[in-house]
Length: 259
Image 1 (cartoon, one colour):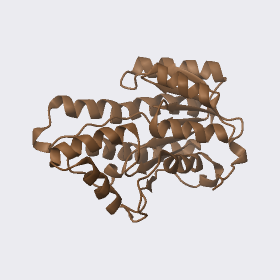
Image 2: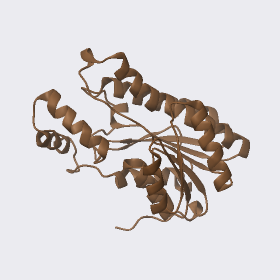
Image 3: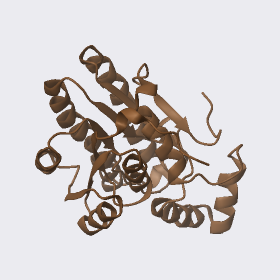
Image 4: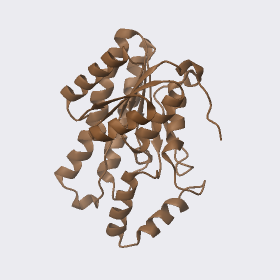
């Protein structure tokens, strides 16, 4: 199946956080296929460099939990690309535990990356976009941002925060012509999912195969999601075809969640 071509994206410049692997890498690839110049920012510099080499882009190290690191990386991206019009704020983490067994460290780890990381990257990019008079932000939220997920209460809470922030920021930036949306993936086949399957199998005392079967049984379209399924929607949200969409948490779940 061919991918739609959005001619208006040709020659634009994007920053993708957490772009060294998984969904972020798939989005970087999809943007590059549209002719977008991409800077991949990741806490794992080697992964970012490998991804950048693949898509013909640039690589920078970033820790989205730290304002100085985000500011420095985005300033450098501005310098090497001579500006940017797109932010894909994708960096995220997960861990899994029964809610009553969660530690403060579990909670802080998820919120520091998933919520604070979105806040910092969005705020810093949005200030740049307001100054330049244009820009698009796409945040990676989750199915768990729509429905509280057992064993992922802390992760769910952090992703609900992403959606709340996305909606509020979209309202504030609309007068500036800057759109802010989020994608909400479901059960996506990534390295993160592999870890989650192992954790969930242990916590539920079932086999990893049973966990995967349960994921598929919850998905009306009948398969595990791919990073590319998410990437194509993210690219659409960057395009002029989504010009009247802002503040949305777009479900890309294969029908797991339909509201």
